[in-house]
Image 1: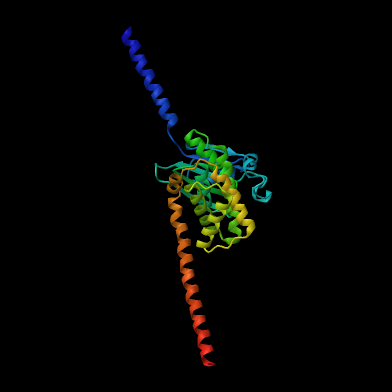
Image 2 (image 1 turned 90 degrees about the vertical axis):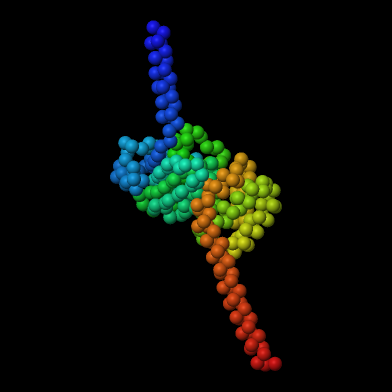
Length: 288
């Protein structure tokens, strides 16, 4: 009798262990806009290269999107229907964030990655997409929700709100100074603020002006104040600079090209100015 009890106890332990393992096992998650029709849902799944019965599917409503975006972005960019969708799958530790976009015309993959790092998303492959062109602001809501499904843990609520504000602020800047330039600017300012633990608004402004000058970006006073307000909130989050830089390593390579372009343009402008100055000196010499 005791032997049978021991056997059944062992079997029970095995089942419990298996259940824990299965629960902890990570998987692919697809976030679909709740207002997509059947054909559009099928289109998204085909784009993500997954089958409905082989992947976990969650849905995001327009109200969920508005909970994060209302007051940050115009209503036309949020829309009245939840359309944006996302695919999220985990990557090995240290692989960082890998982002693709399809039919997203306002937010870039670099902007998504920046905001995702702020929200606390780590080591993930993400595809943000829609069946037709959309701004893409709402996709971050689905990305965060899908990542929480994968890990089984909720992201910090304040970090999620700030991440959405970061996405919108960067997108707004992108309309005036260029999308790549805006992503590079916000990324570098954020990393400096977090690394040096800066909280004072005047110090934040000084860093904004320094980095904008390095990137040869002209900012209006309104834009500077908008970035200051964002960075004040970022400075209050419990962000780890090492985690941020590791997660953004892949996009850093593409954003580094902006610095190289700026330096190259500076060199060209300096040579043009030297030529103009030489020509003026030559003209002056003719009349001496």
